[in-house]
Image 1 (cartoon, rainbow, N blue to C red):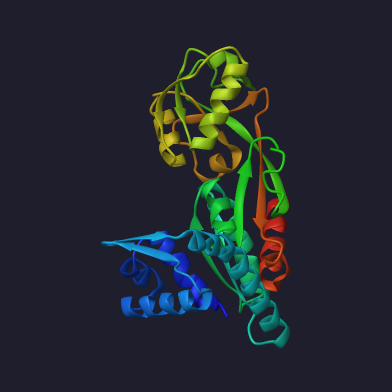
Image 2 (image 1 turned 45 degrees about the vertical axis):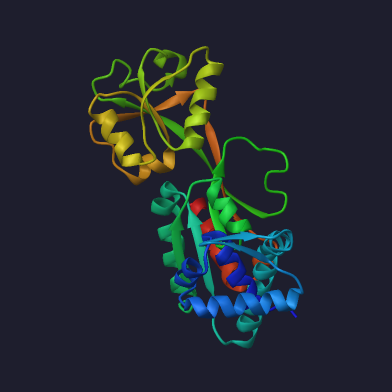
Length: 296
């Protein structure tokens, strides 16, 4: 019989490439990792790893087992949490992954309300931009991914539970002394000759696509995933940018003026989870609080 603890060890070895690195990640000793891998190979009846010097490589059987491990472990976690909640043993735990502007705007209010309503629920938070955040969910490394997309892509999230939260419009940022800083709105085409400051890779792609639809390729002189850095560069007069409204809300733009952009550029903010995890009371409560916070 294959045990869940052995699957967790296999995933760690696969991700890190060695017994010693897997032991550090799991908080145990290297001999313990080696023993559990031997036990798993005995249960499977075949070799799962090929040891070449200091490196580990998965066999075909090992690759198949790792591929199924995420779903198996997610289902087991869901079962454990649901049974524990029913039995009244604990309220549960939730591992949340969020993109930065969501972490600073939606997450704090949602988690504060969750703690007030369910003080026994423990929530951890790490940051990741899509598509990495969605990969972490599918790999079983988080329970909820707060993420976004520009325009629906057919089949992109068909295997996941999608909780729509809000539509976030992109806002133009111009230096205070810019000729269009006092306008009620600005057309992307009016900024064709400007120096541009771009944000995260997905936002950067969207910016290029929108500009190309308006007949020009933006001259991107600066690119950074750090929204305060984008605002600082704009405020210093080094260029213009478009940022999500959530990002503008999270940091007061010093020396920069926010102006609506035409045509409207919008992104869909959603919370994602796996179907099994959606039935876990703590996960469901966190999704509800994210939705309530987004609706305010």
